Image (cartoon, rainbow, N blue to C red; front, top):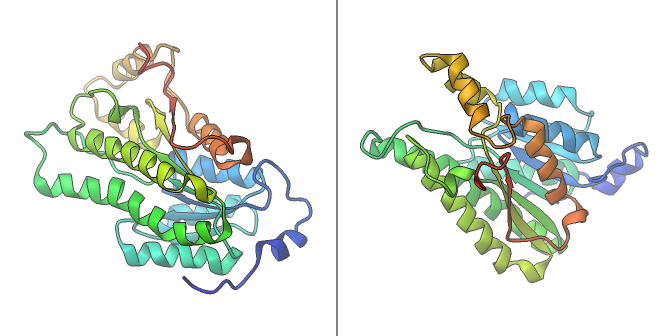
Length: 269
């Protein structure tokens, strides 16, 4: 781990106006270039956090970072690569002196059943969704354990709990994230580090928008997605960001090893 170039207390002294539910916390958000990750970065910034945005599309994370305060940092990274993950966490420590929150949001989806999923495709989904989550947790843990505090928020999915058509690799990877969340929570519960997961239902992200656009009848498919959700609509990225904010904040200090379903009642039906 690189030696810190700055200290968050010094930075805060220069920004007395920063306040909110995450005031003074340093948060890494992966997959921050669009959708849930981008909205989480925006909300965390508004709530006083110093945000490190990670993603494999440099121009996208840079654009989101430009919307935030001057202390936001964009770090291009492929989270399936341990060297790039190490560089990401080192950069956070160099810029801000610590990492208080990690939101493991980066992920990919594959629309295929078992028979149509090639081994290389399966491996790629697991490399990003599961290996990436593991690598990011592994990289931030030493610092969190040393400071005696930290909150890890993994973005899992309802797909890890219910069967969905043509989501074999994706569902399996999200189920693995749920299991890893519980393991990390129990392993480090006495060390001040918490680990929880959010299980989104259908959320109106660019990925979902693309799936809708490719449907034979996009409007009918969109209507179907709304109708299958008991609450009567699909979610928006802010719905997930709000849950992440609670789990990242000290308000959830007695919450670890749990999964928050933000799915409009989809799993409950």
